[in-house]
Image (tube, rainbow, N blue to C red; front, side, top):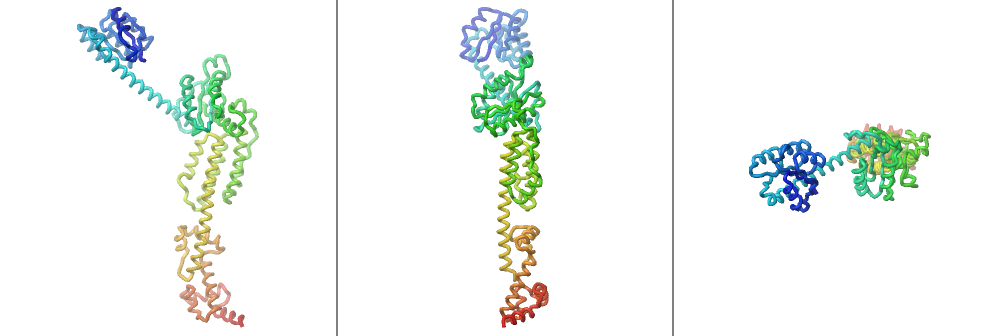
Length: 500
């Protein structure tokens, strides 16, 4: 329903307009009648109606003067002028000054419905536009506030006065809770922000009455707790009172209380002021970096996860901050990344250190960090394990290939590329698997086969040399003697004597 102020110095017309026109059917409510321009201006200043309908010709303050004054106070107000035939040119002046329409008094009741229904459509469109703009501003403000709380670049407005931050965790998702808190926020000046899928944050100001009475937070906390009491699945962490410029501190305290509640589960509301004394002030034992490195190098990820789990759970029960936990997590991520690079494994874009560090920075709770970090550790452990299995299988394949083709002119580069490995990496892994380098293994296979032919056949040395892959008999003899400490001919004689 839109408000309407009627101004006319003719009482009969003024009262007739009020009573004879079905204003409510058209979407309007007459909020006041004024019998002069001066009275109309006073009513307008006090009531700020959506529509002003005024006669043009009035003594002292004319309708045009009233139009000008009203537009100065509220440029968005709609003005409808009432005109007689003799002052038609004044009506045109009024339109030039911003009037929405004018009506001839002789045709007033015939024209009113069409004009006011058109006005209602315009006002509704403006109202919808303003609502959309407010919603957009509110959503943008919520996004910027969320960025600020996470410590990211933000253009959020500076909050004046004292606030406390309440962080709400619900396993069912935050949509319905967000809608309910948003309705409360409109009346109570709370700032609402979403932090992830299951966390909703409310920044709640200290009221003027609380400041005057020097009370801690009775009204604001009572309103908040009453609102939360109906949500039995919500765990609420409440940070300490801080200046608006330091709400990040209260937010981190609130998130610590959410973690505490999720871990211990004995209540649904945890206030940092009340719980601070029960938190241990002893330093939390951080896993040794040498141990972390060893577990990663040995692919003992279960040991790594167990140590990190103990550390993070202890951090929740202590005065350790989320920044402390993030430093440990980042160190683990760096070492995991180094391990992948050492293994010459392809690193997915989402596993690049800068990407993981950015994701880590957005985490707002210790348990959230724990679950996310453990999923990364298990994923990378799986990659390393598969790579190890694949590498072992490939090396077995390489050895079978050499055993079958050692008589041919084969090279390390040829075998490595056939297995999609770099020659340098293949060389290292081959030596680990075979106990000798590639060339020595090929030589060993050739000499062993030559020895078997020398002992078991009457083939000439030159024939045996070519059969095992050496075109040059003299070179073959030198290699054979180096490996067996005797020449091929002497080896054959010794074998023949031993068989007699």
